[in-house]
Length: 568
Image (cartoon, rainbow, N blue to C red):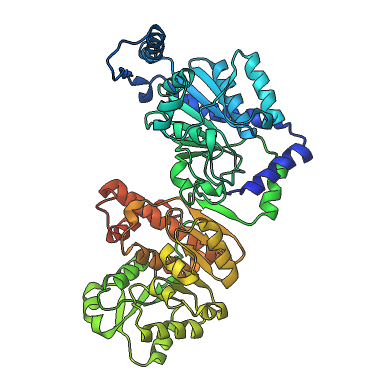
């Protein structure tokens, strides 16, 4: 699915309103309706979140004296808020609205929920009212006309300890009511947030993190998440669902933002086609991988094994005998026709026992013979478990200099480039690097953790004329022209040594099959497809084996079922 950055979305909105004549309030109304529909789905009476019972703990004075009349009145009011929840099953919804148009979406959502009936809605304004946009003011007038109001949220505290010590009674009542809510709507910030969340906004964000039983629906993106990078700006809302408008934003799928977004739904709010065509025509391709680009086309009936790719794999070292086997098996399971596996002579006997379909051979001492073998193949995989011995690194650099076939560079193949990035820059054939963040940091010197994975991957691919597959949650596949795919499959159970070796073999296997290259220069799409299938196999393993127990070998065994789902 096509993604849009914050800047692109602002331009789309401008074109829709100014060039196409779509009223901004109409766009806001459509956005609010999509959020209201999501809230209603979560608070229906048959949902388990409405079945909880509540109690209140009253703290008595330390000196044992009885409460005054005023103190007893306050206790009774607090108790009534809680007990009324136990006797009245009507769902309670809190809508937090900031001073921008995202807040306007929230105000409109509160009105739509009130008009629908069946729930008790309170809308809270957070921030400075002088900064309200005209559209949000218009939506507040509609809310007032419908019998609601936009209350000021003035609890400017950042810790529960501080709140108990300083907040007044009305603030205590408010927080107690919020603790009984069945759903909250996050409409604090839109996609333009670039600075840390502070003050009363931080208090509101923390309130939306305060309990797992109360789901949060975020408008466009969880407040506190950078829409372009997924970076958490101080604090961020933990949403159960994010209703994003027109097109998803990158920050919903990369970085920590992916973990805060919950289920992501995309709502069409009425941006005209002519405005959307600008993005498709002018914008660089930036998409999520929620299905394969190409799919696995039917194999030609007249084909032979050479048509499905001859792969050369240079991998393995003492103590790392699993990596080459995993890469080779994954390549074969993904359809490679022939796989030649070159390994150091001292581990060859071990590898030979493990391989049935792949063809292992001990590396000769003469590097020219290794080069000759690699040149006879269609594609090479260099690096899984290869080690960092000086002579090994020299061999890797020599092959990169001499080979004119595509190369998938993984693990120690990438490490060999550290300090020799010029070798990569001089290559003219396709080069694919598949680093995890640690390897990428060693190669580039960028600090860990990488705050903006998408930009880092795209910049490196552009600068060095290669394809970069930056592994991790939301794996990014970036091309030299700035295009990129963000993967949506996979799970933490794949975070085990060997998973990357499997991916390297899969990428090479898809690139080497001639019938899959029918669409011209579709190498980027095939590589992104390999990442998708890799994650999908991991998801299948998680379902059947659990994230703790699954192994990289299980990924390979899951490939037949996974690939079968997407075969023509």
